[in-house]
Amino acid sequence: LIIDGQHRYMAAKLKNVEMLPCRVFKNLTEEEEARLFYQQNDNNRRLRPRDMLRAKLTVGEAGATILKELCDRHGVFLFKTGEFDIPFLKDVSGMESIIEHWGAAVAEAIFQFIELAGWHTDLNAYSSYTIRPIMTLWRKLYIKSGHEDPTEDVLDVAEVINGMPLEQFVSAAKAMSPHCTEHIAVYELMHKVHDGKFDLSELAEKAKEEIPGNKNTKTA
Image 1 (cartoon, rainbow, N blue to C red):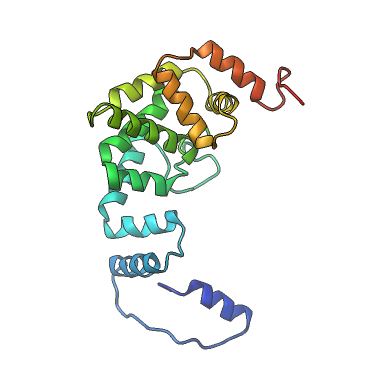
Image 2: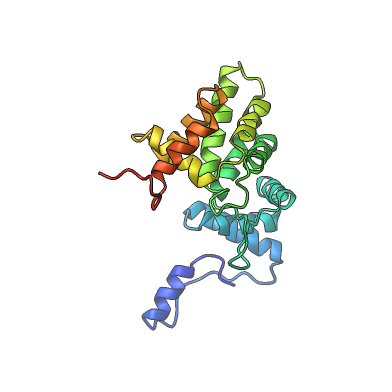
């Protein structure tokens, strides 16, 4: 098992280099191997978040364990085993950050929001396109309320949105805030729904204008 240096090993093979300097660890347990792998690559910042998560789970890191428990409870895949692993958590680092800074209850609220909105079977349901705007909405309402838990208000927004596909909602958000990043546009629309400024019929009409291939799509 190569704990660190996979890239150098592959480069050496390509160049037919037969020997490289290395340190050899003998008789390590699986947990000890994973811990070395996690710590070394965390320092070098070279691994993908999902690879890091796998190592963290092996050593029992608290945040990673909480994330896995959340995914298991909500039927969300953390690791790919086939092409039909849906729903699949795309934004691993985003959810890890939420758990670290805001706690498991807020992460749970995000999963609940996606389910209540009816988006959980969408390919992008658990990506940064949804997780970041929902977290921004939660944080803004938390600040506005004087640091009271806004989870109930956030989930009320999800119930209002329910029935509108994720693609339509994102398209409507981009139509209403064309100069914002997608994340900010989606958050802005969620906040307007929370404030009661738009109804679903208006959102649906704006979404139809934006979805590619729709006969009502406006062209220049």
